Image 1 (cartoon, helix red, strand yellow):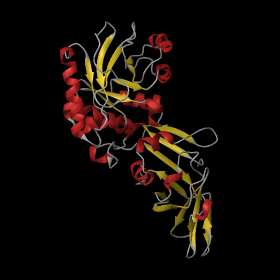
Image 2: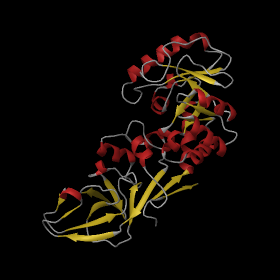
Image 3: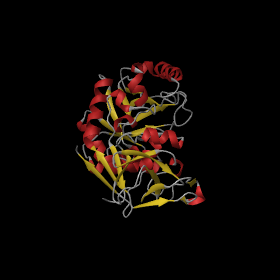
Image 4: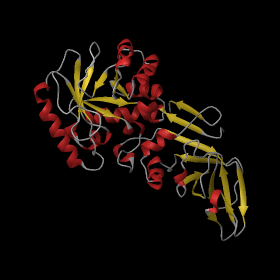
Length: 340
C-alpha cells in the first residue's frame, strides 16, 4: 500500500447526486465542485454528478472553470466568485457563466447577479437594471446549517427584490443544508456542494439523508513498539504511559492533511477503532494499540466509521476544511477514483 492512499468512490458521488436531484425536484441540481471538488477531484466528481442528475457545475474561479472545461467540454459551468476584468475574455472563450457581485456587469457572457441578503460578503445591495447578458439571480445563505430563521429572512429579502423578474431569470438560493431541510429555498435551482460528497452539512450523519461518503483515506502501520512506564511518543512528550503500552506509527501527518489538532480522534487499525495519541507531526501519527500488531497492518484514517464529521468535532472545525486539506502530492500519497 502507498504510505497515504485516498480513494474516491464515484459511484457514491453518482448516488448522492441522484438523491439530491430527487429531493429538490422540480428544481435543478447544480453540483459545486470548487476547490478541486472539495478535495475529491473536480473533473471526476463533476462527471459523476452530471451522470447522477446534476445539470450544471459550479466553481469558484475562472481558472477552475477553464480547467474543468478541458475535461468536460459540454458541461454548463458557473463561476461563483468575483471575476477580474482581465479574465472576462477567457471566460467568454471558455463558455463559462459568471457571477456579478457589484455594478460592473460583464457583457457578452452569461451573468448571474448576486444579491447580498445577509452574508455580508460578495454581492450587490440591490439589483441594477438587468442587461441582455443576465440569465440568473442568486444569493448566498449564511446560516442554513445553524439558524434557519435567519435563512428564511434572507430568502424573504431575496424574493422581495427579485419578484419582478421571477419569470425571466433562473433564481437560485439553496446550498446543501437548505436544499436538504428548507424546501422553500429550492426555487429554480439548488447549489449543492458538501452533501454531494456524502458529508453532512450539519456535522452529524449524512446517512440520515440517504447520502454515502465518497472519500476513503488509508495508510498502514509503519512501525510498532512497546513503551515502558514513563516513556512517551512524539514531540513535547504529550503522551506519557503509566503502564506497558503498544503504539503504532502511521506514516502520515499534517503535511498530508492529518491536522495537528486531531490528537484524540479515532482511526481504525485492522478492524478496531484506536485513539490518536501524542502530538501529530509533519509525517507521522502515533496510535495506541490494544495489543501488539504486525507492521503493515492496514490503517483507515477516513472510512469504516472514522468519519470526517467526527474528526472535525475533535479538531473544532468543519468537515469541509478537513476534506479540502487532504494532500496527495507526488511522493506523499496517491488519489484514485474508482467507480464502485
